[in-house]
Length: 266
Length: 271
Image 1 (tube, rainbow over the protein chains, first blue to last red):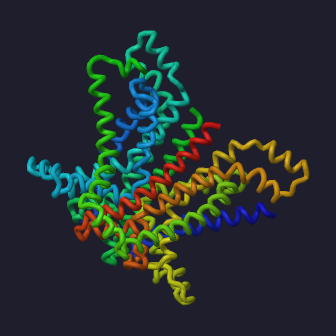
Image 2 (cartoon, rainbow over the protein chains, first blue to last red):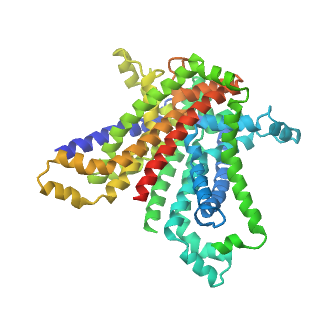
Image 3 (cartoon, rainbow over the protein chains, first blue to last red):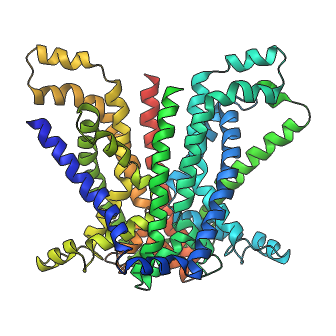
């Protein structure tokens, strides 16, 4: 009896909070029929915004993966960092989780903006950071920073250093050790981290909005375009772009489930 | 592994590059924002923070985040429990759906809520007739916060429930304890650390949320303007010092929360 009540309540919460909104996005973008949807996403600004989002996702995921894995290895294995220092660095990794995305964007504007020393220096060299793509990438890198490190670290801690050390003493080449011994065990953690990073960089809004200036056809991403469309009461067009983003997210969610299952097996 | 780090000459450069990246990307911006907010001394900082619109925005954010977190604690505990303990059709699907708010762009989440509860929608129209205003008022902000923080409590208690030793629970039943008594004296204490750390994370996320809220809040200064949107407004109107001052207030609060979570989790792993 109780069991049935709890299950029904769970279904109600899910339907109201998650399923109904998801369905609404799908039906909403068809409000003006197929042509309205197509028009919404084939506007030049939509295509440009989706391209910007694509570039950011690829660059950020690449950088975050390489640096994330390396940093996780240092924080777990390196002997040249003292224990206290390690603990301090370890707690610093989580900082971006505690920072509001808007504040993350503000930080970059404050340090690298056109009115700052570093910003002017770069601008004189013909390299614009804030209100341009590099700043947007930096902002997204900041926001996604902990995701990979936090996925890889626990796996490294769990497997221990013995196998790696054994491989090293037997005279194995260092990169060889990495690929043959370390990589197979961290692989699924890394893949899970990549999926999380893609999801986060695809959807990053606050930090990018502040840093980009949201200039149409220049620094506008898919999420900031949705925002602008809503502000301009162009809800159907916003819906089209939002549907594309939501479809990607659902795909990523499925990938997440799959990677999580593989992670548990290995 | 050590061989990889010892290497030849490149190892030192490589190592420094990674650490430099870490410091420049994470530490420098945070130091920057603290110095910027005090760049003109204490008085302007104090003036920015004591602006009635600023502290009203911060108070409103804290209030609504607390409401969203408390709701989340109840819903999260219930759902986490149901998804682990009961077997029923659709369980696995629901379990994967839990992470949807993490995968979905927050701006899309905000738009969904706007469409679903807005004045032209079924629910919005109904509520309006009853005299309840949702969108562009506080309830919509709470819904948005609840949506983005939905997975935290559930994901924090699930591993605890999975690990839990069933024999304790069975012992309680055998000794004649009622279901409710067993729940509150055996099961609930096991879940409590998860509920607390999940709630803390949810609270700090709710404090920081921007994308979902900015679309549904209406952003009326002093009424539905939350802190992160206030900061955004200050940046837009070229007042970076004021934005930084309020940011420092919000950041310090978030750091304290994160630190508490680490403390709770640290104590648990020490045991």
